[in-house]
Length: 288
Length: 97
Image (cartoon, rainbow over all chains, first blue to last red; front, top):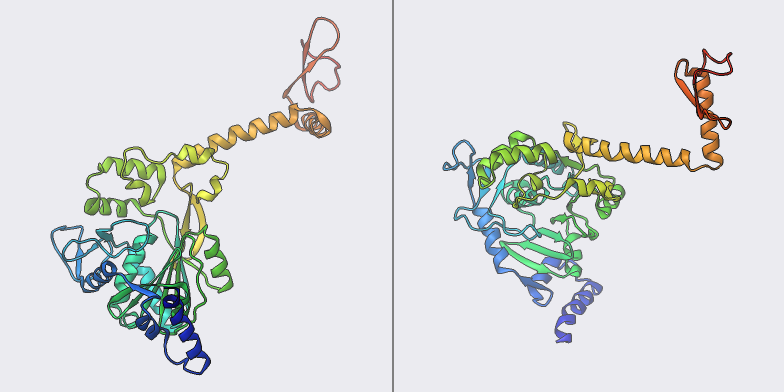
């Protein structure tokens, strides 16, 4: 068994040494099953997301439209769970915030200027970065500029490679090889992910207090863009579409206490996290 | 949770703001009481620093206190406290009891 897992690495390194380096890492992924493992669930969810065309408007939740707009919901045609490889759990729909569209326009403009550039995205925790990642997957599959790019998604210590309608879990070593391919779109999703060296279009999404994130954008000389906190209008629109089990007055009360953080405003339990507890905490500064 | 990031039109960081008015009130209550307690314990603890601060405080009162009452403790007799007006009574040695 040990021979099976080490052999492809040895073969690959030997080929690079004798001058067969032009053989791409992607083809290695296809050929060395011990270094990558297809994730059938993610593959089917990825295909479903690419094919999905449902955007549900808040004005008429029963209606469907094919154009992405702020204040709409993105969901799959058969209402099945959406692609989610982070720790956010099962996601059935995504509320499209106006800032998602604004950011994506800015991002596309910047990518046209710097096709292999590095970009950083952040926001106050709880304002929708994780859901934005799913939105980015959808938009990356829709936009001509990004559609052709294989995606390397890095969450925590896990790497996933989106290649030709299939999603693979890959080892860090293979991920490093993929990240230096200029055609790759490398998405690093916060938490304790330390980005690997890349020579491709790279997007790092993380909380503003993430030290890896701060080091990365400082050294990459990148100015991060931020999503703003939610407005009460946005929260109420989202409530109307997704969280009707929560009383509308509760949404307004929580907004007054916590401000525009959807994570707390749409807290699923009656008892929300204590602000007083955070204020008494001597490390409260970290809670930004 | 307590502070939120405000951004400009280009989605760049502008400044941080308090999460809500409610958070502002909670923070003020905590830090007002904490700062007052710290000052009281600093001035009441004795030692060289407390002495210097007390001296500064008294000089300030004499110079700018005007009609602010200054209560002094007598170490003689049965009348423990006298109240002086800090500036206008400076010429008379003793104010009213």
